[in-house]
Length: 493
Image (cartoon, rainbow, N blue to C red):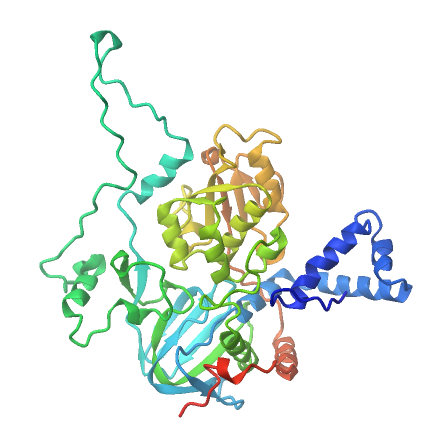
């Protein structure tokens, strides 16, 4: 179905999706699919055509959608004016030219898989790999938020509403009672900043000495925090520590990975034996996003304002971060808000929280990345450690603890999450309930619902199919952008 409607700058294709859904529902789609489609266009050939297309689209593997999601939501790999040609270098590498020392940035959230001489390989959450080669220099460090000393206690403290009455100091028969001391404000205990006599020693550098050295040398030609990240990190620099950029480091989109005047950039999609693909159609799309500023933190998103539960699942990560942090229906502990501000929380987790809120199930979040151990109680690496999971201790102000009965708020929330499909479907839904699919009952989850997502690395295309897809993408003409809004496409002088 097509629609020519356009409201407040929202693309007609976005509106058409939800307009068509409402139309079909009004036409009794739930009970008679063919009749509902026929109501839109009174022609049997049209109904047959729509149903055939629906079957074809439904047959697209979810892992392919995930891989393409990562590829299409990336950002341009050079944070400066740049240009590139259509001719690829050996190994299907795209040569990108910019000024000397131009910042080379992570195109997506991901994990660094390889750091070598003039080379970095980054893997995103969907399993796509991006190779940056011919770098003049690789970054030695990347920023990571510091967490408060009492962060680990936040989840336990918030899982059950605290008793507002202070404990008695003496027997009630002892006469008049002393006025109790006012309760301490949460987080009011000072956290001492650790200073090192020899901050350059290896152990000291790894535990805060590096920041101490940078502060001492700031103003003497040294790069400080701002130079390690290409967009506002969302945190005060004093709340950030620098970690060595090495294999296994988790970085977010926009993190500076190195410097180069001539970058060789390559893409290998998710999946075993996947080929290196022509990156130009993908990079063209990233450049277009940067030019329009539709899905970037610097611009106003076209899906601003009130959105349906379905629409929030379409929002890009930067828009979801702002939406979740501003939504009064989503209660998040302060340390977890820092995780979101600094971009460490997976887009799927953010969309899940927004989805629950729009579904009338207001979540209280007690664990994201901050405040959760690296390993689970069973000894496995936790999804929380990579920002791919969330623990929810209350729904609509009702604690999960003691409310996992049939039909209760816990079951309502779990069943709502089971409706998520494709790339948005959780890999784990852990509580005391086992309702099929990814749900799992575990005794140590009596006080919260755990929602976890896993990277998707299943092979979805053969080499020739990827080539056909990229050739087809390369044939699609990109829309013209007004010259005054261009930044990355302008020829480098």
